[in-house]
Image 1: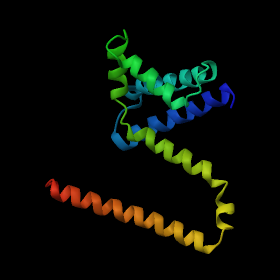
Image 2: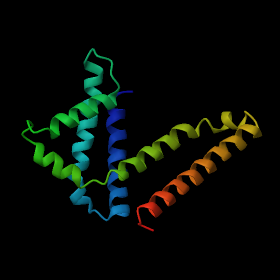
Image 3: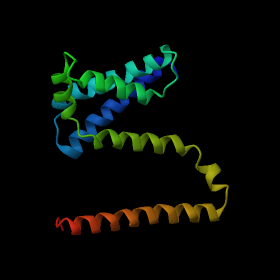
Length: 148
């Protein structure tokens, strides 16, 4: 993937994160903008590092290392990075990750459907079982902790 495509994808992700942070968590665009820019710059620099450095690590490893370095006590911009990124609710980026995952598998749905109705039925059971199981675990946990 070319760097321009990466940058465009990160800009779209940044807009989505800002929108999810605003709609879901009532954080103003202006307040979340520095944190989003920091996260996107870390991501873009990590992509560049992964292409340059001879160690073949996943981009997410370079993102983690760079983020840790920028937030460590030795970093001169530590306070700004932590304060800015702290205004981003981290379920907002997860919304975008889910959307991108859905888009990425959408072109494979016909191939999936060609495997037959049994595979569709199994997929349905897995999805329903995962949802019901998660709901039961959450209900038990919340009941044991006295939240509900």
